[in-house]
Length: 158
Image (cartoon, rainbow, N blue to C red; front, top):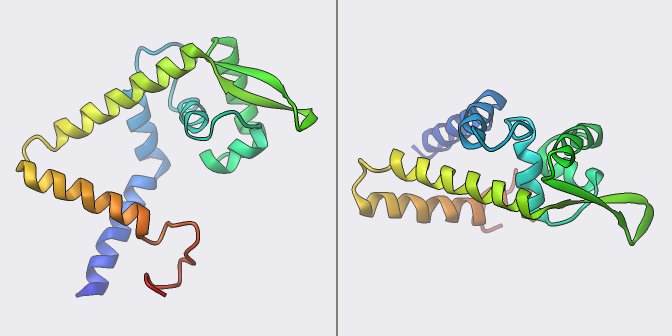
C-alpha cells in the first residue's frame, strides 16, 4: 500500500514539475503585468524575491536555468525597470541582480493571483479538508524528501 501512495505522489509531482505545467501556470499569473513579464522571466523575478540580491550564477540553480539564461531574462527585466544591477561588493567582477520596487510589486501581484487561483480551486472542498491539505503539504515540503539535508535515498527519520 505504501508504495502505491509513494508512486501516486511521485506521479503528481512529476506533472507539477513539468515545464509545460509551470509555463501554463506562469502565463496566468503574469498576464497583464507588463511586456517583459512572462512565463520565461517570471522564475527570475520570483527567485530574486526568495533569495534577495544575488548574482546570475547564484540565482541560476535556484530557478533551474544556467547563468546565461538568467542573464538574458534579467536583461529583459532590467530594461522594463523591474530589476537593477549593482556591483557586488564582495567581487568587483560580478554584478548583483536586485528587484526594484516595481519588480517587488509585480511579484506580489503574481503571488496574490496564485493564492486566489489555489483558493478558487479548493472552494468545493470542505474547509477542514483544505486546511488539512495545506498543513500536510507544508509538512511534506518541510520534512519530506526535498529537505536539503536529506539524501533522497534515505527514509525520513534516518
